[in-house]
Length: 408
Image 1: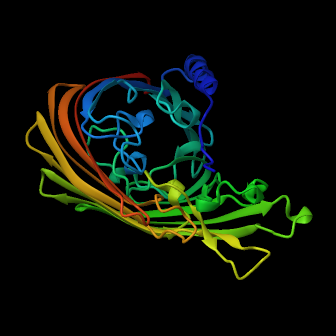
Image 2: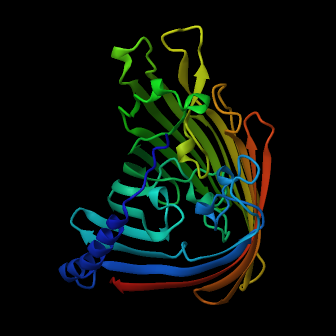
Image 3: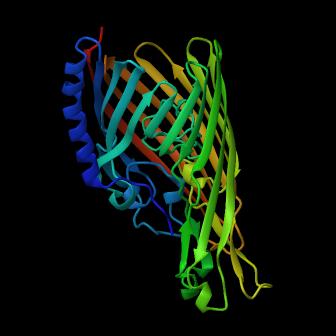
């Protein structure tokens, strides 16, 4: 069962209302001192999935959502038009006796979870920070957002750590070089594989006794930066029927991961964005990976004939952003993710995926861009020899705005 982390649609409207009412209230308390940015953009993506993808993800490229068998998602060649990338946000910097208070509320229109496939308000960030302490929902402290390339497609490289999570963060070092340590909301997903229809597993429930512990350190230089990150997490599951049956499918796993990432400035026109990741049971922190826990056969033990195990994985990202001139830029690159499947998973379980992109973007005026982009995705199944390739071509038009209020 997949444990999805999503915000109910009504919550988006609630946060939006809070933002609109909060801006004038704080500004009146500190006239001419508090600073507010209202920003966002409207974006149209118009293109064609040359092959097939899950229709809930019609406008992006996600290797995990490509067909697991022939014609799983109908006919090839679906045209799409989408505004789901469009975004709105408000951020503030308010002086207080304890230091500067920073807050941000940010939303886009990209439905996920129960809203997958829909154009609906989704909370991206709800965050506050005072001094070295921050709390709310923000980019995970295991994630390096600067690895994300200058591409037009929304989802991005599959092998990148990309997860916005609820957390409590401590930042003892701040600035271009920084250190973050956080306790993050736990969660995970499991694949019961070939045993998913067994009633004996109906009583197995996930349990998360501790928050996830994450950390990252960046060392910044004139040539770019290098960043390391780590995660440690506890995942448990309890068989609620164990007291009334002869079997017990309870268990636990320790998830852990390490990442090394960098931006390298190559001359004045190029930035090379790199990341490598390795770990076990950290898939839900990845940009596009399936489950954290898989089923392993254990028939020699009649009490626990199958057990859950943490799935090892590794991934990489390599993209080059190039500036041709003040009016034109391009990005080209490749990403890959590989999972070491357990023997109890179905033959059509996801094993590996690849992602590639190349584009040309034109900036005709400030806050306006238009571009064309080709993206490629590939899926490889666990053990049935199935491979699938998808190709996507799209043009995008983006119109941005930003208004600053207050400040000294």
